[in-house]
Image (cartoon, rainbow, N blue to C red):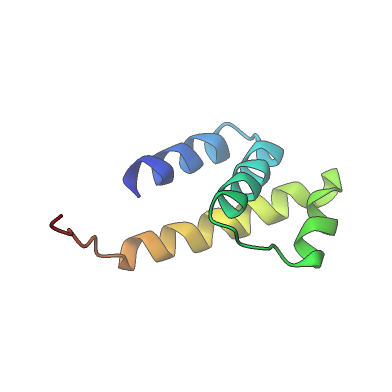
Length: 74
């Protein structure tokens, strides 16, 4: 979780808003999560990329701050 958070912060801080949105699309695909149609439509328009990336990073950091890692013994 920490590595993903650091990567997202790095992308956001560099101003690569389309890259951040694309990374979220890749994460969603990796876990089989279907993104809402509105997200897909908005992410296809350059004007919305900064808005989406700001919302994503804000929510991600808020979630990460309340997330407690659980260790599983195998």
